[in-house]
Amino acid sequence: MIMKVREQFWTVVFALLLCVSRSWAQQTDPRVNPPVPPQAPLSPGQSSSKAPNEGAARVEPEPPLAMPTPDARPLSGVEQFTLGQMGKRRSYLLPSFEFFESGDSNSSITSTNSGTTSSQSNFDAVSTLLGRMSLQRVWSRYQLTADFTGGGYLYDTRSDLNSLIDQFSLTQRINWRRWSLLLGDRVSYLPEASFGFSGPYYSGLPGTNPVNFNPLFEPNQSILTARSSRLSNSVVGEIDYNFSPRSSLTASGAYEILRFPGASFIESSNAVFSTGYNYSLTQRDTLALTYGLSLFRFGRTSQRIQNHIVHAAYGRRITGRLALQLSAGPEIATFTDQVTGPGTRVSWGMESSLLYRYPRTTLGISYTNYLSGGAGVLTGAQSQVLQMTVDRQLSRVWTGSLIFGFAHNRALSQTTAGPAIPVFNSGYAGVNLNRPFGRYLNLYLNYALQRQSSNTGPCTVGICGNVPLRHHFGLGFNWHLRPIMID
Image 1 (cartoon, rainbow, N blue to C red):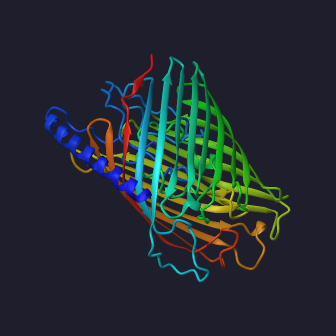
Image 2: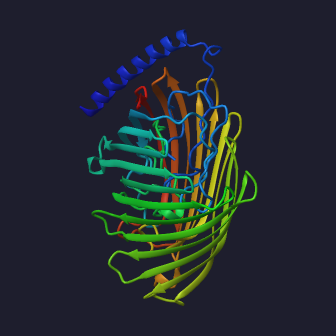
Image 3: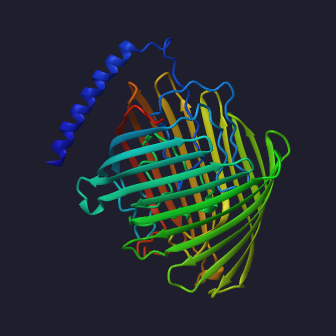
């Protein structure tokens, strides 16, 4: 019955696309309506937390301002740099809808105990239904942005894997003459780890992405586990004071949690406090010195980690073209009830990101080396995460995206028993092609793969160190209404 409904549905869909395509081709002349260049991603690698707007159907083009608005985020703040505001900031409400039909070679995200890397031969048919609502409200001194995505997976023959997908993000900014305040929240309820998640992150839903947090302010989810629902939430606050046009002081705090309803993974929470001093050398170059403190807690255990961070940072911004951040320095962690080793650990940490826009291409790269909560598998970990996105306007109507990510998570000796220190290497890659049909409908195709290797033994309590190459591909469309302008 399900297959018949799908066949009828796709017959209607392709008939509609054909009609829209012919009508659009007759009415659209590239000399009159030149193509709009691709917009830059707000955050390089957003897929832990990383990047769901790749290849997106975009809000209606707006005439650019004579002078684009530069990005004003402080270098020591909770958010990463962007390329700035390239159009007039307006208040609007934008609803959109999506249907995606795909095949998944390893829906359960499991492996054999022998650690073989051969991929499975059977593909599960999956239907993804999503709805999204994006809001931006602008006042003279206030700006509110919110975004909600909700839907779920429907499996053809694996009803036990049917699951919900919910994401909500919100930011509120308030600006005074010298003071500014930022409040933000990001919540996600996903059926698997967000690192390389092949759900709405690859679909290209239109809308805003109001939350663009530094990786230190979000729970790490870069270790693949067996399929299991997880709740992630990050609440942040930041206050800034400008001493002069060149110098400012920033104080911020965050509370982040990672929970696993119905699963026996390691739940964690982390309270983060940070302060920093920023100084602008030139209109484009900024230096900063920051101090941070992270307080990790793990479920009902008595193990605690306090991590002190001192970083020196450099930032460079060219509005509409370049956004660069580099930050590095020592980290000193102290442990409560450690299993082995000393109670103090000294290491180095680093956070870096780059956004660069060419005439037809936008490149985003980020690299982070930091002490994380362990992604529900480890009681703390030293994590190195590299992510990259490339968006390009391929032709007048086609756009393409390439994504790549790699994460190296090593357990801490102070919280691990046994002769071997567990290490997990996780990676993903993908490609997305997107074509608009008219002004409100987009067709997209994508292919993604995931893989994980580890020195751990057989699968236990849903943790499989060696995950075979997982393939995920499909075709879908998203449709959005005309933006509803708000006075």
